[in-house]
Length: 118
Image 1 (cartoon, rainbow, N blue to C red):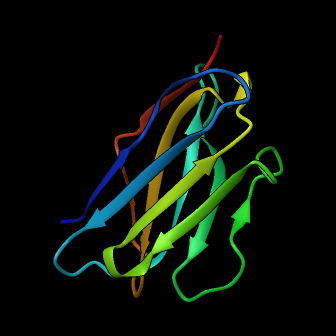
Image 2: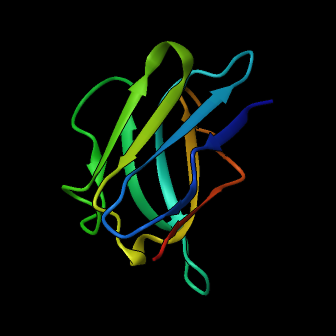
């Protein structure tokens, strides 16, 4: 059993910042990669950012490059998403994805709402 839990969503004005956190826990879980996706009302879930545990450059969707930063805390299987210069089009439910090493199983969190509005 692997639990993935996000936190840190909320309401922010355009141009503001938010920081999301996500932790993956499970007795045998070992991360290969973790990342963020988002889903706006009436739209499909889309990739936002991802980071691999072994290293290498993080990956970002073009729409968030230069504004969002993903980071990790390896020891606790935790990732963060620092979101700056937020725009109304960033409004969505943000989901955390954890991919295990070995078999490559994928786990999802329940999501956290981010609303960018005046």
